[in-house]
Length: 423
Image (cartoon, one colour):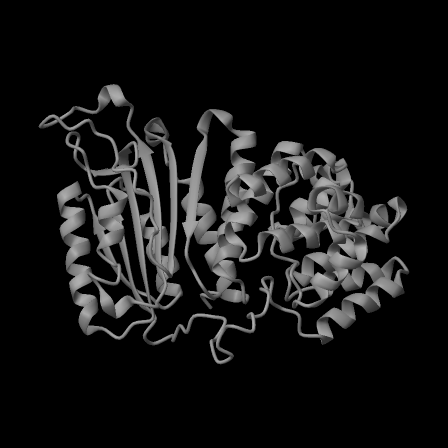
């Protein structure tokens, strides 16, 4: 059994064994703002987190420990309570401290406490929201969506707890503020075999952050991306309505130009129709441009100046039905199926949805809207890029639950070796 299959098997077993309340807490501890507490949702959320985390077993064990589910730990991981406590204590905080704090507060509140907090938030939450939320965590999710509560902004939570007479919990929030615990993402420390001087985050200077290439072959959302990455101090190169060959030549020129530039990162955003995994650009025929060809332009042998530096790719594809795609020169129109990334320091985030959505009036990509929103919030907070992507995935999942006829599918792969903060 491969490591992925083993993780998948364990996650399935855990998701089935958790109670509804446990599932809700587990999803929240993973950094998601989705309120669905189904077995399917917790399974998919844990799968995504396993894909992102450097030590998946430790992360899942930490969640079960936080939930007090030592019975599942013993059954699934064959470890007892003393063993898991010893293992976790050898690492830094594995779970995001802010969310651990909110779960701890939730566990110590009575139903009447939650009702009093909802009453205090009468002018903050709509009547519909107040009627729908039943737990303290659901209240916090709504406040986070409104950007009123965050790892760096907990004053509203502290005030509510003081006003309902829960001074013990208010003091816990105050202690959290005093500790300076403002990062949502923390990783296990380096093992003894690693160099002690190795930094745990990529260096991004504001004045030499790098270039962001945006190629919009649809006519939607390119401007939104441009504004977002300019605000993040990237030098934005914006191109519209290019064919597949023109996309390749444009990126090839950008890659060549990188050899004379001292930059800290590279970003590529593409919005285009596609056939399978291949980018079509404005073309209506031919095999298009494969993901492999795009990625290879910025790997070490082609672009050595970018070795060790983060290379980020965000792609929104509008899938053309096979019957509409005309074959050319005997090509079968299929992608080369060599999925990026294959080299270190790459994030590949590719989202697909049906081309028919472009027929909607004033259409905007759910994926790109969630991405720009999450990046804008990350600028105000010290939030790691992988946590940003988790929020994007959560927004897509939430959208798909509400609008199954307009489904989005997001595939994320990465080989990032350090934290990446786009402040």
